[in-house]
Length: 202
Image (cartoon, rainbow, N blue to C red):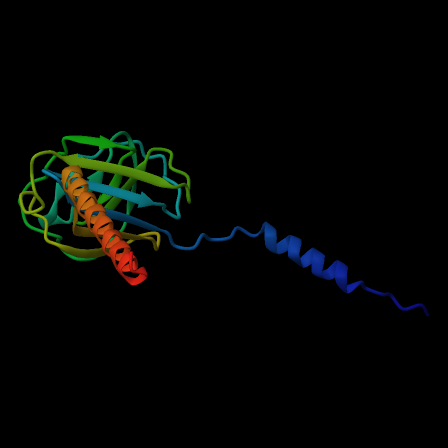
């Protein structure tokens, strides 16, 4: 009686195909916002991604920041609303949402008291996002923001991190710093040159 033979390579290949057909969950993603004092303005820039697609719940939210209620919405436009936000109860003081002077990018952010966060309308999981908001002629303290790092966990397992407190030098300050460094470099080279001349007896 002839024995049947099963090729182990074919078995492995078939198992691999079955595994590839099973939907794979995305690893958790991260969205980070840096809020800095830039000259006389405050600038918040966010970048990153989320591991879930928007539920196509077309809506809008009030763009702005309110540290006392842990509320931050960057950018502008229609959004998708998702549920689930946990983290620090606040990242500052102030009793009302302060609307930015200008924005770039799609609407993204969260409201802790609303237990919800938003992504741009029609967002696809894993797509990179960049949004920003600028508040003219104010300071971090003026917006009621407290320096520090605040991490929030979202309902899909992602993280939303807010860094408050870095300062970006004004262009004039950067220019003066550059001129100072250049002057030190030239002075150092001149001293080295003089020492070499003295060493050679010229």
